[in-house]
Structure formats: C-alpha cells, structure tokens
Amino acid sequence: MSHRKQPTTAACKNAAGGASKRRWLVIVAVAVVACAGLAFYKYATSAANQSVTANAGMPPSQNIAGGASDGAVGQVSFGPTVANAAAPPASAPAGMVWIPGGEFSMGAQSPPDMDDVGMQATLDSRPIHRVYVDGFFMDKTDVTNAEFEKFVKATGYVTVAERKPRAEDYPGAPPENLVAGSVVFAPPDHPVKLNDYFQWWTYVPGANWRHPLGPKSNLAGKGNYPVVHIAYEDAQAYAKWAGKRLPTEAEWEFAARGGLAGKPFVWGDDFRPHGKWMANTHQGHFPDTDSGEDGYRGIAPVAQFPANGYGLYDMAGNVWQWTSDWYRPDYYKQLQASGLARNPQGPDSAYDPAEPGQAKKVHRGGSFLCTDQYCSRYIVGTRGKGDVDTGTNHLGFRCVMTLQQSQTAQNLNKTLPVTNP
Image 1 (cartoon, rainbow, N blue to C red):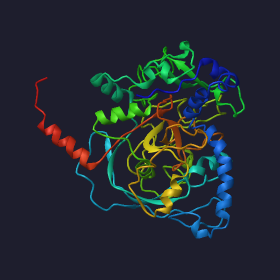
Image 2: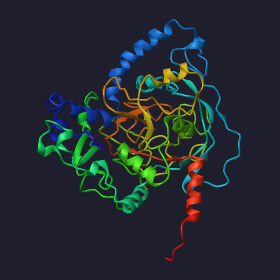
Image 3: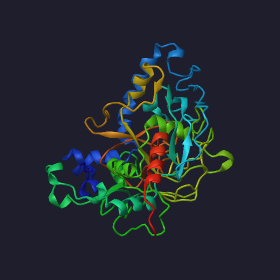
Image 4: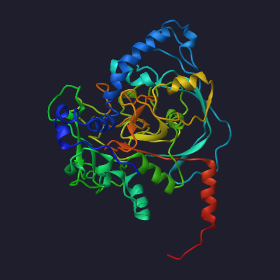
C-alpha cells in the first residue's frame, strides 16, 4: 500500500527552510506541478544541449523516426495516421467510444510559434517514432465525481488522500504533520517569479476528492466535474471495479490525435481557430491571475469544449490524466531503435533525472493551469509525470476497455439474475 509524499505546511510557506532538511518535502512539490514542470526544466537544459550535440552529426533523414526533417532546428514532419480499416463494433459500452487503432507517428511537434516554454515541454517527447496500437474503447470524458462516488458507495474504497500517512513511511517527519490531505493550487495575490513553485502550491489537510479545495469545500452541484486528488492506485482500483483499465501512453496519444497526423493541438493547427477557445487552459498572468476568458476560472465540468475527431472530450486542458506507463525521458529513443513499436506498454521501470529513485507514471493532456508563460503541455504529444502516490486538484483520469473486456462484460450481464426493484 502506497502513501503520498506529504509536505509540511511550514515547507510550503518556506521552501528554503523545510525542503532542504527533508528531501521528501521537495519531492511531492515536484510531483504535483507536472504542468509547471520546474523539475523537468532542470533536466531539460542539459538534455537540450545533449540533443543538439547528438543530432549535429546526423544526416537529416536520421534525426527522427517516421518522418523527415526539413533542415530547421526542431522542425519535423510526421508520417500519416493509418487507422485500422475494420468496421467498428456494433455497439459501445455506455459512455465510451471506439478508437480504431492503427499506425501513427508518436511524439510532440514543435510549438507553432517556437516559444521557449513550448520547446521545453517537447524535449522528452522526441524522437518522433512510429507506433501501432490495436483498437479499443475509451471513456468519452474524464471520470466524474458522480461516477467515482458510485464506485466508492459500492466498494467502500478510501483514496490515498483520505488515509493518514504512516510514520514508518516518513521517517523523521513530525507526528503533527502526519495528517490526511492533498496538494492544492493556491495562487498568490500578486505577480511572483516563476522559480519557486511553493508560491502557488500548498498541502491542505483534509483536501481529497470529496473536498477538492480543502475541508470547507464540497461537491455540491459538481457531479459532472472530473474527480481529482486521485493517486495512481485510486485510478487503478476504479478501473478494475468498472471492468476497464488505464490507457497506455501510446493508446492515449493515438486517441487524443483523433485521426490527425502531427498537429500541435488535439483539434488542429491553431490554438484558437477563428478566435474560439478549444480547451480549458490558463488565461491571464500566471500564477496570480486567471482571467477566465475561456469561460472558466479553474476546473470546468467535463465536455464543455468541442470533442476531437474520435468523439473524446477534454483531451487537452482541464485536468491531467494518468496513463499506465512508467516515465523515462529516454523511452522514445528506445522505441525508435526497435523500429515499428506494436502496442508498447512503457518501460520496465521509472527514471526521472530530476528525481532519481522516485516511481513516476506518465501524465497526459495538460490542465487548466497550462499556459505558454510556463507550461505548454496542451500541445498534443507532450508528456507530464507524477509520483504514483500523489494526487492534486488538477489530476484525474479516464479508462479504456479492450474489445475482449467489453464482450466479457456483456456475457456476464447476460448471466446475472434478474431481480425485482
């Protein structure tokens, strides 16, 4: 049983004081700001230099897999998406859509305006490589509060954020700090430098999926909002109960692209086509001001923006989504070397140069905090990462189901006895 890594209130108020004494206090902050990506930036600078050096002596045709370089730094072209031609199943499970699967180029395109923040967001999403995935069903939306509540009522499940941390898991932590809670975005009331994420994240005792902003908050009127403060094992438990599973990173990206090839955004080439907002992201000065120009300050209900080509909602922005893959920044290089990767399941173990030894899974999609001022991970193909035992108020999930799982569920339903209401 895992437990999230909990920072003390003092550490959140004074990073220099608490974090330097207890490394685990820093780890949780790094994990929960996957959108901000400060820890990744520490790695990205050296990785960028290494990448330029490594590619400098390579002919253009070898700079990427599955596409060709046009000679400009960071500019690549993607191969076509070749969807499976087989007819889709006659029906889909409730709330799910069929994703045909097929072959596509996986990875992140350079940001259209080549902004520095966007470039940092794509460094661990290279090289572009060809991948094949089988067809599968996917939830149209992130799992909502109402759906997760049904699971909890049926099973009595208690999420990681609701459990009191055990002293043996946090040696040296003061007993008064071992309280159940989770990490919440708490913006300052004035502009701040973006080199200290403790200025906008804080550990809140009593924060969990039922109380997303702390014990005084609740879910009244928010049944159709994505459930948040979900650790990886929480998402797994729900998926198992629902007869589903979490998507692999390759499945997630194939689905997010919606049949498009190499586009920077889930919906196409332009961030705001014809001036229309296409996802719930951050507007205004980050992190202190969210102007809500897209219609929402903070998290939004599911399915408030247009679906992609496969009928999936919120595959960019609103809340990050768990995938089943361990995180490694060099994994795409491994896949490229193997040729066409078929149904890749991710690396065997996790490795984050910024936090060696921490078990991290890949997050996808970005959140309502993503902005070109600090995080451009609404760009399709970009990757987030997070400790498996840590949830936040901008992290949720959605599930997938194979055709075989769907058929098994249908057969099971046929054999269940009919009872009177």
